[in-house]
Image 1 (cartoon, rainbow, N blue to C red):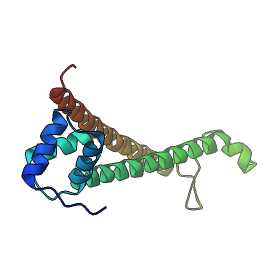
Image 2: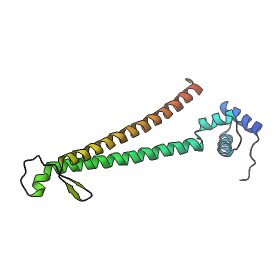
Image 3: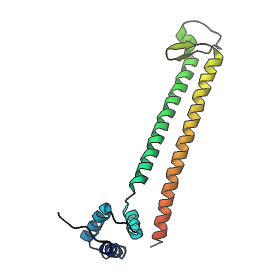
Image 4: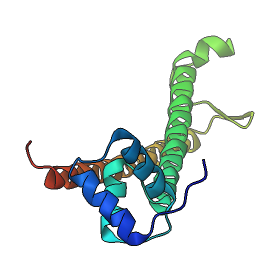
Length: 165
């Protein structure tokens, strides 16, 4: 379909009719299509874009970046948990796996295929993993808080524009 872009006054008139609920379904679809591609700038255009669910590219890129960071943090947390669980299981079953009797106080960890039996080194490695785990939990919590703040602001904006009907 070959259609001509609307001028600013025409677009503002369509937006006004949209807010007055006087557009037909076809006119509303045409307005939605026009809003999605128009290079024109006006506060009413921004308002109808927000109302119709369009977002700015920059906001979308920031959200994607935030999701990527949250995903990376979640993967790091999962890896830290797996390491801690593996070490804990190893400590609990080390005497039976080694085939030798010990007094139960021997610390053994395997890092990159190397066996570490120095208790201080094993504890240091565990503490470093737990610290990284805690740090990643803080990152995820911050990302979730930011996302909830964005959603809250959007809901408040919606409620301000559309008080109880």
